[in-house]
Image (cartoon, rainbow, N blue to C red; front, side):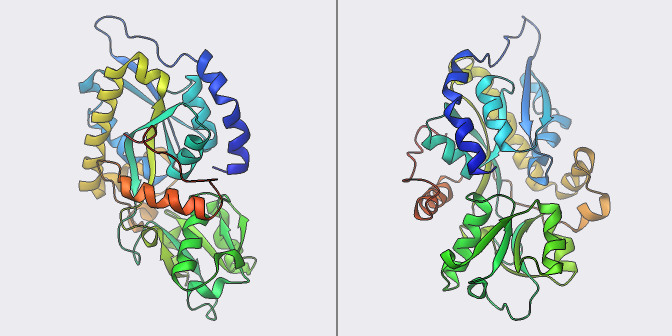
Length: 314
């Protein structure tokens, strides 16, 4: 989610919240119909597995996933009532929190593997002259969006390597387009996630750092809902959260099921799914890692000051 596109949209969300209808009460004896805004990436495999395993239906939830281009569409969609719940990266949620958008995290989304050398999102280079992240000073790195979780992570990797993040330039490229730009020398580094990471490494790319460099348990994304739905139907929110927690635990313990599931809701083929480094799916939000990211965003100027997360996190 691009902060430049996000902030103007957030300014209108409080008004949207006042007129949005977040859920139609279920008729007696019928399940609650719930629509969740998601992004077609490996990160959301747990919710698809949870639906298939019946974790939602046994809690009287008729679950539908609707794919969006990104969190920029999902945040206002949740506030307006288009979705009852949504999935978005933690930086976008912290930015929304600073803008006092009426949302709250209800379940964890996805985490770093904890292994900086084997993570599902990594900083990749090819030039032999670039030996450490410090060598990216004066060079250009591809990020999917600026002033968000990817470039914040790259800056921390550079900082930890003894470099000055302010001397690194960033250019926005979609994840599928990064590899070609790196091969052509248009960028000297890229922070890329699965399923695009494994092919990049197979073609001679070298990893200089990952999400785990920010925090071994980094909370990369989370599921959230509107404050209005929490007030209107707290029992539904409780049941959804419990189903998500069960889904996250199932996904984390069944990697083969994850690899099969992602081929059903993305364009990822089975062979590519088999080569992916899978993330960690913790059942609860790692609040300490969110706090660390909160401080980094303030240090880097994405936030004017660290956000009071007491109203944002569970």
